[in-house]
Image (cartoon, rainbow, N blue to C red; front, side):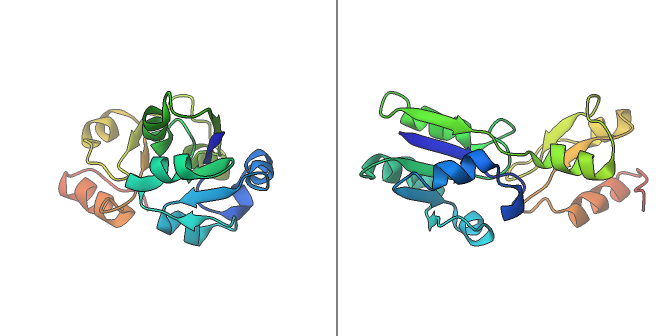
Length: 160
């Protein structure tokens, strides 16, 4: 069995008990290098391009850790495609950063448009222009400072 486990927004405190329990039952845990360094699970750093292959080579059950939740622009989708027909898989849900941050702000997210800029380029200026609030998942070159600069360059106000 290969478990694809989402570990939430990056804090060991936010990894679900289900993921922690399953981690204690597997022979091997794989994670991207940056993720492996940020969490308390004993994960072996592994390049994304090799995760499915290494998981299939594992003698016994294996867990592949992915950041965030398993359904919002997650590596889980790619891994499931790569493992389809080759191994039994399960997906373990994590806490999404959107869910976490909205809870911290004390606001609902039922009307928020979600846009991922984590490792991808996406147009967000239209959504920001037409909605009172937008959730932008940042990462890579798309850091908050750069997004604020783009908003200012577009003539949109940035709340302090």
